[in-house]
Amino acid sequence: MFLDLVGGECPGPLFVPVKRRAPLITSGKNAGRRRRRRERRAMPPWVRLSDIRPFYREAKRLTRETGVLHVVDHIVPLDGKIVCGLHAPHNLRVIPWYENAIKGWFYWPGMPFEQLELL
Image 1 (cartoon, rainbow, N blue to C red):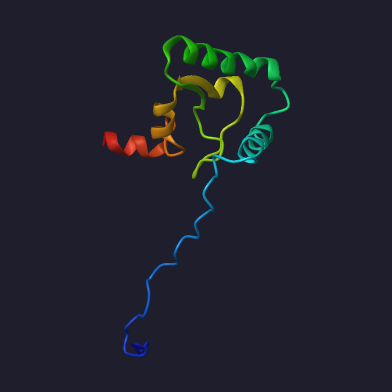
Image 2: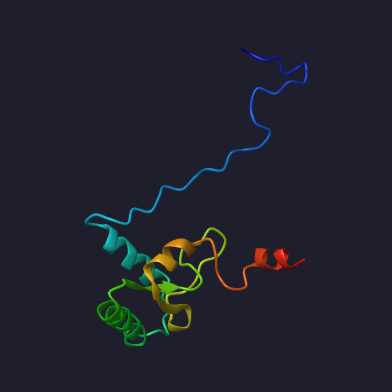
């Protein structure tokens, strides 16, 4: 059914729909390469790989000792919807994979929306 715009009726939404990004593919041959490329782009020139490797070693050690998969988490996400963090030691921590999966790229400490909940 075609609606008449002269009468004040609108045939569609009153807002422009947001164009969604393609989902990040986290499996397959190129997924690891894509992740490493994204991390390299987010690594400032003053960071050395020798500063970052201990986090990955610690994650591997905790996984082996506890039997629960531990991963290196970026506190402020590299490709967040609102912010983009750095691949640097001050932005890394080792946590169980489930906590990291729940957090996703939707949360980081001190995010502005957290302050609104306090009011």
